[in-house]
Length: 198
Image 1 (cartoon, rainbow, N blue to C red):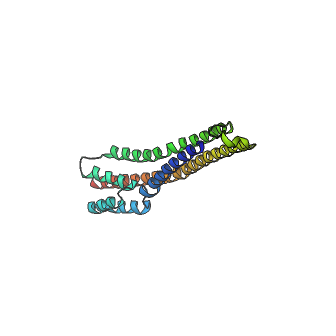
Image 2 (image 1 turned 180 degrees about the vertical axis):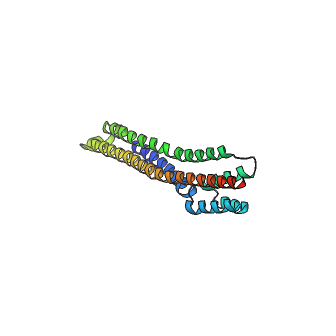
Image 3 (image 1 turned 45 degrees about the vertical axis):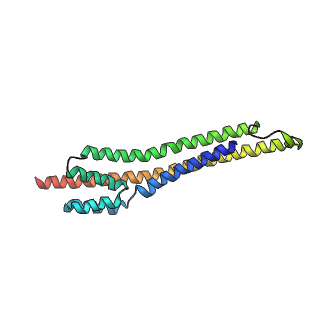
C-alpha cells in the first residue's frame, strides 16, 4: 500500500517531467541563429509579409511569440517596447514555473520514501495475521522488503526529478539567451532605422 502511493507519485512526477521536456525542448525552441538572421534580414528590408510568415511558421516557439509582439508593436497600438520586455519576462517565468514543482517533487519523494520505509519497518501496511505468523521471520521479511521498496522508489523518483531539473535548467538558459539575442537585434535595427530617418 505504501509502495503503491510512491509509485503513484512516481507517475505524477514522470508526467510533469514529460510536460516540461515537451515545452522546453519541442515547443519553445527554434534554431535561433537562423531565426534571428531571418528576422534581421526582414527587419532591414522592411518586408512585413516575410516577417509575418516567419512568426506564423514558428507559432509556439518563444522567439516567434516575442517577434510577433514586436510586429504588433510596430504595426499599430499593440504591445509597445515595455510590453515586449514584459513578454520576454513572462516567457522566462513560464519556464521557471515548470521547474519549481520538480524540485518540490524531488524533496517530497525522498521524504516520503524515508517515512514510508520507517513505517514499513514498524510493520505498517504489512499483513500480520493468518498463516503468515506461523512461518518464523516471514512478517519481518515482508516488512523489510516493503521498506526497501519504499526507499528505492522514493530515491529513484527524487533522483530522476533532480536530474531533469538540471537538464531543463540548461535548456531554459539557452532559450533565455536566444530571447536576449533577438531583443538586441531588434533594438539594434530599430536604432539604426531611427538614426537613418534623421
